[in-house]
Image 1 (cartoon, one colour):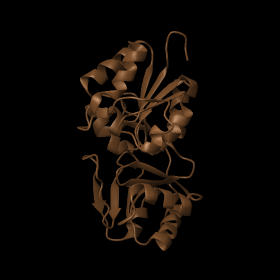
Image 2 (cartoon, rainbow, N blue to C red):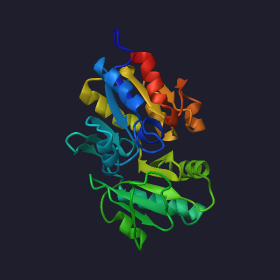
Image 3 (cartoon, helix red, strand yellow):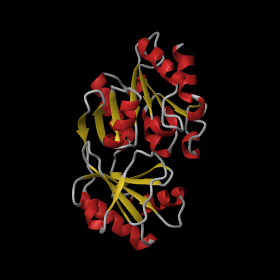
Length: 269
């Protein structure tokens, strides 16, 4: 920590954390962030959304800083609408992981997010996103079409397994090939091995001259766990997944009750 400033870097997840259930930022949260940044802290968004899917909401809430997107795959300058870094999933590895999963679990509904700011979403089979109305997926006729262009990640759904069950099974079956994370309802993701919100946040923090010891992080889902492990202090929302609640340094109110603001008001006045 810096003398007189509790944390110099405030890292917030978007969905289920900074955003209300209506996908806005409340006036109270805006005011708390403004007070913290006026005191000298830096706010950085760290989201599982690919940059192209994050851009509309970042623009809507007036966010112009650096954002870590795509579970750490992308560092995005929201003010300049420019990707600073981008990492893709090896498509051969992605295909192999899907083959191994389906050999044991049966047919999966699969979606892919293409690399770049366009972040086109492609779906094969009955894949359906349950959250974030501004996410769009184009149905493709064959699985090969998912891999026609570079991709940042794959999404999985199973007709019978719960999200937690599918996540655990995927880690067991292909955890040596890809990263597996649960990012939201019906959003089980396959990522480049070793990639996480923590790796992306570390890259962004270095660009800002800041460190893990300077950081307080807010989140609600298991994909926020690496960020909590990296940061000096991890704050889970009351609506968070049990896996995150179990390791958080602190639990605040839900995203519907200005949980981020409650902590920032206490720390920064």
